[in-house]
Image 1: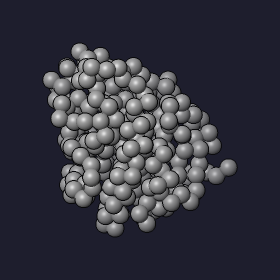
Image 2: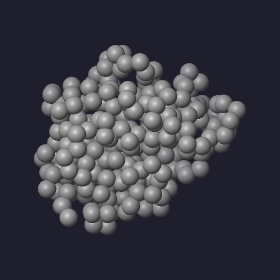
Image 3: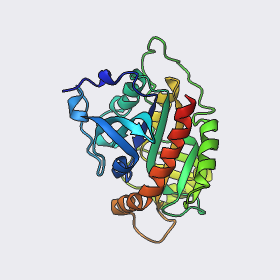
Image 4: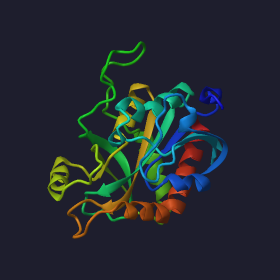
Amino acid sequence: MMDIMEWKDRAKIAVILGSGLNDTIDEMMEIKETIPFHDIPDMPEATAPGHVGRFHYGTIAGVPAFALQGRLHFYEGCGMENVVRPVHIFHALGVETLVVTNASGGINLDFHAGDFMLIEDHINLTGQNPLIGPKEEGRVRFPDMSFAYDREYLAIFKRIAEKYPAMVHSGVYIGVTGPNYETPAEIRAFRTMGADAVGMSTVPEVLVARQLGLRVCGISLISNMAAGVLDQKLTEEEVFEAGRRAQPVFSAMVGEFIREIGGAQ
C-alpha cells in the first residue's frame, strides 16, 4: 500500500472531477500511479453515483498533475472535514493550483444543457462552513473571498474556450447540500439572488483552498436545466449523459488550460 505523501512535490496542479465527468480521466490524463480512497487511513469511500473515489498522479497535456476521480459530498453523511480532506491532501503534496469541476443545474435562462460555466463567484447556501473550528497554526482566520476564483485563470480559460465548439458562459454558482434536487420555487429565489447555476459540491473545497492560499479555477458542466425551467422531472441519468457528451471538449479545454498555466508555474 503506497503512502500518498510519497507523491509530495511531484506536481503543482490538481484537478477535481465532478459528477458526470469522472470518466474523462482516461482521455485527459496519462496516469502513472493511483491510490483509492480506501488505502488512505480513515478516508470514507465515495458513495455518490458515478464517483469512483481515487487519487491519481500522472500528466495532463504533458504537465505533472494530480487528479481526484470522484469526490465526497456532505449529503453522504461523511462530515464536512472529509468533504474537504482531499484539498488538504493536495496542499500537503505541494499543490498551488486547484481546478475544481462539477455538474450543475442551469438557473440562467440563457443556458442550455451541455453548456459550460466558468465560475466567477459563488453563494454558500449549504448552511455549513469547513473553516469553522479552532484556529490552526499558520492558517488565516478570516480568509478574503473577494477573488475566490482566480481572475487571470478565468481570462485564460475564456480565451482557450473560443477555439472549441462549446458554449462557455461565466456566472455565479450557488452551493446547496442536497441530496434532493431543488424545488421550482427555490430556483426562482436563487435566480433572484443572482445565481446562474446550482450544485451540491465545490463551495466547501474552494473555501479551504483559498484559506490555504491555492489559486482556483472552477468549471461547471450544465448537465440539465434546474427545476421548473423546463416542464419535466430531473434525473441523475441526464447528468451522466451530459458528461458523456461533453467529455471530448471538456478534456481538450482543460488539457490546454493546464498546459498553459503549467508552463508558467
